[in-house]
Image 1: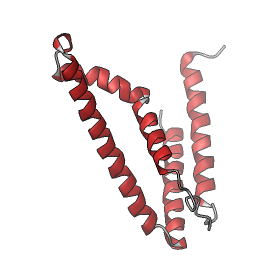
Image 2: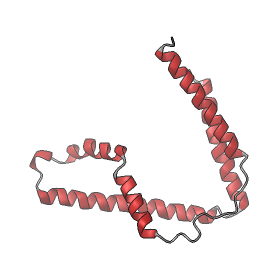
Image 3: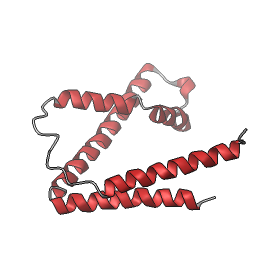
Length: 139
């Protein structure tokens, strides 16, 4: 029977091997010519889906549960206070999502060339392989 420490060591080694494999596959992957966003037109559906994924993320929910009591007395909240906090949260989430979307659009314009895509694949693959090597080397 394996002890808990041995189980975690096995999991770490398997994870490290998987990171090395994924990193190698990414590092050596060919450049793709297909642009998967061509012809995609359902922007409102994409917007709603992105918002719902973000708003239903358990980490986000736990963050708000832990964070809000620091700034608000939850016992004395009125309906208008809850509505105001909800609107402010919605605006902040939308601003964050729009910043991410704008940054992704900017990056996609910069990564149109084959050389840029190859550099990105090699950089990301190297980082993944480095993380795998770190997991193997760490105790």
